[in-house]
Length: 206
Image (tube, rainbow, N blue to C red):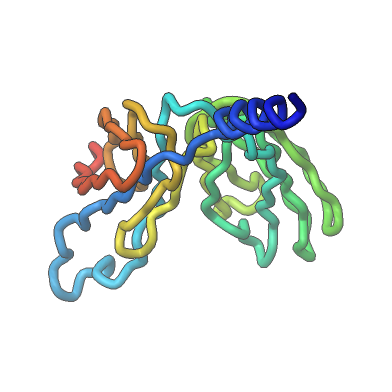
């Protein structure tokens, strides 16, 4: 009887374990090559992020506290990807005071002037693009893309990205890339193996 109960429990427990899904492997195709001698010819790839909407949130995902510091009269880093609900800390690691603010629809705040050694933070509670500045040093600018899910990936310098172990199903792939139109496409993820997407983005309207 005990053996039967143990086997039955084992079957139920194994069946309840989440099954790994398939992978999305994508590549954002490069845009037109700038003319020879153009200042942008050797410029680094613009920041980008790809995410998948409609997937249940990862049980293992924990909200993080991300950091953009102020150092050398610049934001560091100047680009960041965050998930809705995460906290953005903004310590002043500079020898001068700063006043960090944002008027973006995704998040509006004005942290006031604070000196070296102090840190202030905000909760990123809405998806979208957040542009932040310093009211004292007008050249300072950083961008935070707030995505609605932890199923995201940042493309490498060649435009390659991968999101792993996605539950099988039909979802929406979205991509934001600086200087390009927002991209959205319906995709299907297999129960195992890879789904491949080659993506060509259109330039944003000037």
